[in-house]
Image (cartoon, rainbow, N blue to C red):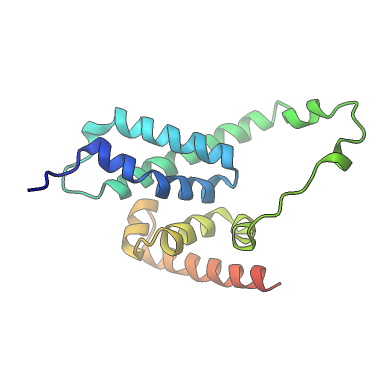
Amino acid sequence: MDRPLSFEDELAGLLPRLRRFAHALSRNPSDADDLTQMTIERALRSRAQWQQGTRLDSWAYKIMRNLWIDTARSRSRKEKFEAPAEEAESLGDESAAGIEASVDLNRIMAAMQRLPEEQREVVALILIEGFGYREASEMLGLPIGTVSSRLVRGRTALLQLVGA
């Protein structure tokens, strides 16, 4: 008889899906890795708050989204007072812009990155991660109608961006 997976095993099984969602939110591989790590750490520390019998994935996605909102707010405050590190690194190097190579990204991911954040997170949860409308609305704390309209607008925008 198979014994049920432990909390840690279930959480580890979510890592690829969490990383994909983190990438959809952050649009940056390094930030996605950091966000995934922070989510796992928070989930492990907050384990007692998770209710057995409820969906661990939904709970973890909520944690990740809240962490991302906190990160974005923190960055916007920081950007008001500090110049980006990239500017300091290229100071005095006039050829830096010419030397940098552009990265050829998957067309869909590039289009996803151009979506507004509220559409991107709904598209990522429903189209990429396979959650239902009700689950996405609960995770995002939005009415189902709002989730539905954001998905329609996001899907339409994606089709236009990819087709362009």
